[in-house]
Length: 378
Image (cartoon, rainbow, N blue to C red; front, top):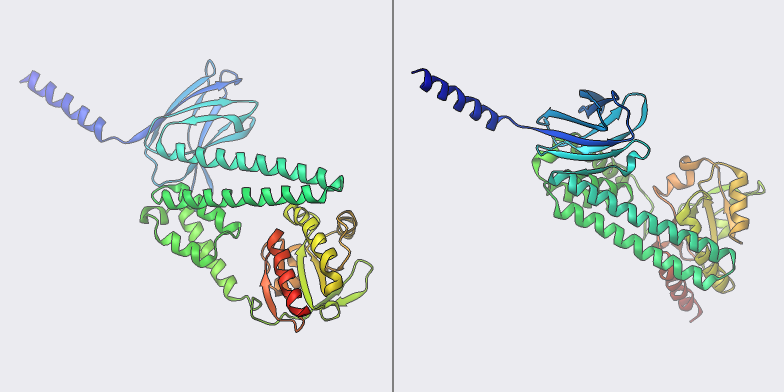
């Protein structure tokens, strides 16, 4: 009987162990001193950090067993008296880490499908950013050397790279509807204005219901609803009449849109601090120089905050058209009236002030201006 009872107890313990869910973190912690405290942090539904466990480092290693996460979300490690953290996705799979005290961003995390997807997403975007920075630097050098054609080619190459980056985000969102990475990708696409609010809402509706109730899922749903509300308030778009405005020029004179009109007019929303704007400026200069005598006018509306930065950028980039700004950053009243949420942003007007195109860049801008002014000359 005792043997039967012992066997039953053993089987019960094994069964309990099989039912128990959770995960472990095993880490190599290069450069950390013995006794360094490691905190495992979660994020509550109200987006507040919560310490859920802790351990200490010995011989540059540590291990900790954790309960099953209540929902899909990020956790992160912090270390007592040491700046920085290590981000990871909590999931019911063993996680292995290699953490570098002097370069926590270089830490390597393996284990679990979610973490694998997360690091694929982050590492790929980092590579795109490195390449974009490289092209931006090349463009800056070419512009300084007066190599306009080469600068335009680099600008076009960068635009193609941005398109590939956007498509990568869209593919990650579409192909991983059961993963938190889809929420991350959709949030990025919406914030970067690569999806309309309605498109984001449609894609959000295809995700697993379990994702929609997560903290990040609820945040995205709120962001989408806010964006839809804002979009419904926009009054100025293709087919409507441009709203007249007046604002100070760099020398303090008040200038209106009406006074700046040509046969074709571009309203160019930009700022000295906006890298994509500065990259596009040589192309706009080229179009202006080619078509100004044929009837093209441009009025630049800057979202700068500082007068000196604004006027210096105008001079450095050779922007020889009219400029106005209230120097109110994103509170610029003209930008708000036109529903501008990101820059560069352009509106192309005919001679009656009707908006006939918007947000064209590179060769597409020149092609449209040529088309319009050739029609005028017939």
